[in-house]
Image (cartoon, rainbow, N blue to C red; front, side, top):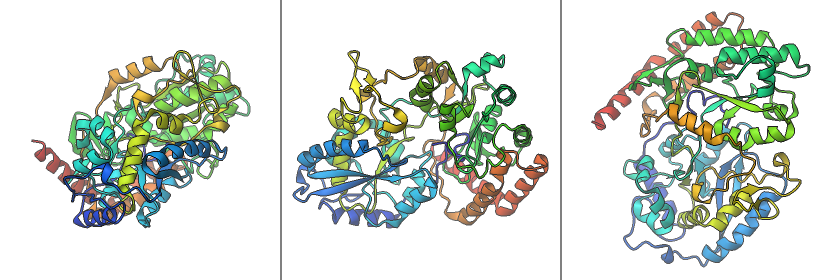
Length: 530
């Protein structure tokens, strides 16, 4: 999820329910398995009352590149034997691949053609509240969840409030899984030490590290990033590491923030202050110095693959990826590289804890079999055999369990080619997770450090309604997409003039109108919370 828009916190979108949405969703449910759903529920609803005589396929929409090694299909085949026995259904996965994923994800859901049943979503990077407003999800309630996903319903408990709006529950939170997805940049500790750096914990030191690579590592690009896919570069990280701010989730584009000591007042470093100018100047210097390739804005390669191969000195993603993936793989592919992690906000303690809805599962409004979809999800999330098949594959072929109960891999396994990639980021459970033997052994210490610095996102239930400013938001997004990549990668000859031009364009596009609408709704939220 290396998002350009995930700059201070990952991108989310606006929310709100509608009578039309509820009516359409309820109709879809009652025409499917045959039980009432949505906000109109029956007191005697139970899973036992669902007619499962007809075999159905439940399709789950997931994010990620579809694997081609056959391991996902093998795991699903084993899973489906169990689903068929228990609920006379099978599961198939529909992937939204990373190329142009934001557009394709929303277009797939907008089609409403009934081909999707379960939808992997999130409130901070997969537009969950915006999709609620657009009618993409089936409205749920306590009765329906108790009947068809009883184990999940009991486990979630008070966290259902995080998923409730206008009297309906819109998705199921991944609230039983511990992770950190705050972003930062990975760098080689061995090369940093060669450069005389004890560590890299601010942008000045990151620049010194990059310069050392330029001067001493022939054939290596300090950060061989794809600007075509990571359009925001390091810009958001710079702003979050130099200002006490947090991005307000749910407002596009991601330029509206709150100061950490005043979450109900909207601000924006993109329009206010000198920090954006400082960042633009710095990235111009870095571009000129060759810290990324000249054609970065058009490049579509993978900096992580380059880092694994020793041709890129860095990669950018989040803590969880560092602990579980990049550090272990670098230890294997580049022995002695001592991959380290500079996370945004490290130097000013501006770290935000994960939302419990950073991963969530919704039922598609157009699903023909919503009850069976919930039943399948409940099994997948809470049955340990199914959970292991889906997340780890077939024991002995995809993974092995050590005598200490940890996750290991068969001899010859290569994560870059043999991974299962079912990408179930929407209902993981600490109870069933196996700790990989390859995990970074400093993970607990890193988590403790993050927790000591982190603060909670203050506007968890803020569901921005963009109805009144849709035209302005579209115009602001166009301006954002026009200027941000070149600012982030230093492609303007005069960065200060470019920032001034960017700000003038935002003003012309309706910035003040959107700002006022966001502030109005924040005021209403504050009043409602007393």
